[in-house]
Amino acid sequence: MTFKQALLLAAFCLLSITTHSATANYNVVPLPQSITMTKGKPFVLNESTAITCTTSNELMQRNARFLAEYIADATGIKLAHTTTVPKGAGHILLTIDNKIAGKEAYRITVTQKQVTIAGSTAAGVFYGIQTLRKALPVATSNKAAAPVELPAVQIADAPLLPYRGMMLDCGRHFFPVSFVKRFIDMMALHNMNAFHWHLSEDQGWRIEIKKYPKLMEVGAWRSGTVVGHNSDVDDHQPHGGFYTQEEIKQIVEYARQRHIEVIPEIDIPGHTKALLAAYPELGCTGGPYTVGHNWGVHHDVLCVGNERVYAVLQDIIDELNQVFPSAYFNIGGDEAPSTRWQQCKRCQDKAKEQGIDTKHLQQYFTKRMEQYINGKGKTMIGWDEILEGELAKSTIVLSRRYLSTWTKAAKAGHNVITCPGKYAYFDYYQAKNTLHEPQAIGGYLPVEQVYSFNPRPDTVSADITSRIIGVQGNLWTEYVPTTAQAEYMVLPRMAALAEVQWMPAARKNYTEFVERVTRLARLYDHYGYTYALHMWPERYNHNRADW
Image (cartoon, rainbow, N blue to C red):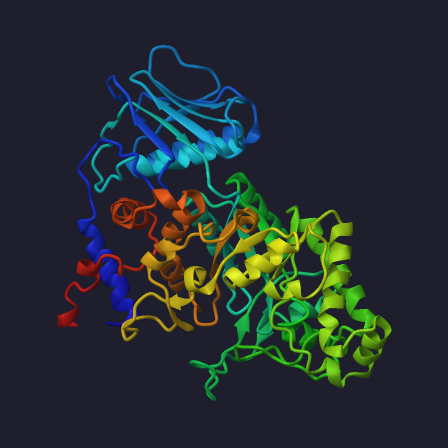
């Protein structure tokens, strides 16, 4: 079965994932901490229901608009939203309650007369809205919207982890602004709050830097892409693009409204062939360099012995700080071979000046970048390799490795965001038999394995696990050239990750999760998301013998 056939099969099979129920089901993804059904008649959601938000807070008023949109999307029922409590008719009240502990915690109370969604912040209310949204039955016809019963209930909920992220690699393949916003919408649906945006690679520079126009003119474009897994065949098809600073501001604002922080990553000093192609004087050899066609690790990296490199990077950071208000800045720092440094007179001199071996120059580079970023009021993030140097305790380690990095980082006083390949790399295949799958980088990561990840295992001491502040899923895009495939690779694995991020491990149950995500798939279908069917074998295998 081809990838296109798989998409057609998904659409066909989703016809069977329908419901004629007009009753809400609070067993959603991620599952709330506490769901207590209470006595009393249900609240009836219909066209006369109003959404009430009495505060003038901009994010709370936007929450009210989001809720109205979500209800209309799912049920077809169109609700007005007001700033005053209506008389007579039942309503949904969105409110700030400072007594609720936790800035992302929320409470939902449903009685016959009123639905109340409360949080200590607008973000908490937003997650309560997501729970209500996912509890609603999804209309499957064009008939007039039917009333929906919300059973009487009290829900108390809060996330396990403060950082719940997804990474989208736009360096290997460029995706349009519309898809980046769609990706953010998918994150919001899954209660995620951190969008890690990978914006530079050997194969492309993706962000406008006004002081250095060649980054866009040269670095944003490659003249071809390798076919297959680094074969000798090139497609000779130009590929590229970049986001203007105005587009980035739009995306950052779009995410902010959905309580998602956008964290930029500019990968340095390695993975910089696109930057070097634009400004070859920043490399050890002086070039010429070309924007990469092949994947993997390249020996041409920034010349860390060249003072001009630091001036350029500081200029880039200064411009990025104008469009990314995030408290964090990610420098990458991974896979930077020292081959060129050991052959470079400037790098050799810098190493001698610092009293270190040339192959350890990245430690010097990372510390210098950290000091500049900290001086701008930001906290630096970097991949595992940054631990090779001595850094400020405030720096956060983004770990693609498992326990070894956690332990080293925690003992050095660093917080950790964990995204190990065996659980969180969504560029891996979702099936052992890859014949009918779109090409991927390799590996095998089914939904159940994602779901099994425990970021705070009992076998690890509390002084280490207490440093785990977040879990992130990564979509690297070497073999993900289209938006449809990007969705296919992350869904429904994103749902499994959402429960890892939100729920204590002791409360997770994969069998029950399958039931919940099956209902969630109705929303995937409604929004036209392309997603994998492997966790539903009877659907995935449907009619394959005939193809």
